[in-house]
Length: 182
Picture 1 (cartoon, rainbow, N blue to C red):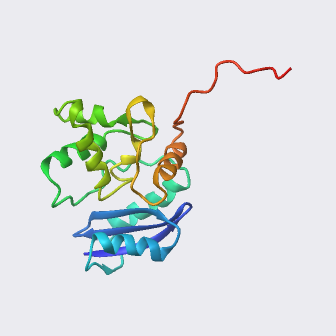
Picture 2 (tube, rainbow, N blue to C red; picture 1 turned 120 degrees about the vertical axis):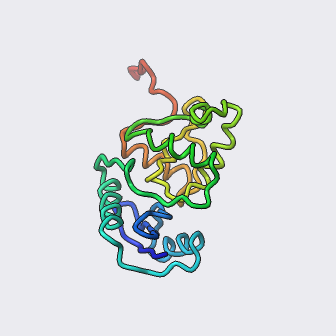
């Protein structure tokens, strides 16, 4: 397994691959060192390497995404070995949620046939997502349109920034009428 750390407009990302498929993606951290620590904690034994063309393409797409460009990661080849079947079903459903769209934990649970009572299991799958951004866990909201948790560096503030990049406003609706301030 190989990895590389690279800079984006939002910080330093990390990517790990095996046989040309992405195994791990690290959302932006403040420093290259922090990103590398995150990657190596999740793929111990990986060594730095020169990415093959398919991986280099994903890195460039991530740079463009964090610069605000509309990017679709739905066809990026992934290696999800070791993930249980239920998580893989959740991830497959989530990969169909496109740029600027959101879903909820309960909706994803229903889409996998598990029913809304499995929303906590969906939350666990999001927390264990090995390739955030590529499997867009930032697009999963809590009930009522609340941001919910986010285990990536920066927490829910990072999730909100990613959604804002995609033109999604999260939070209470703006007032329909404003005071004239007399």
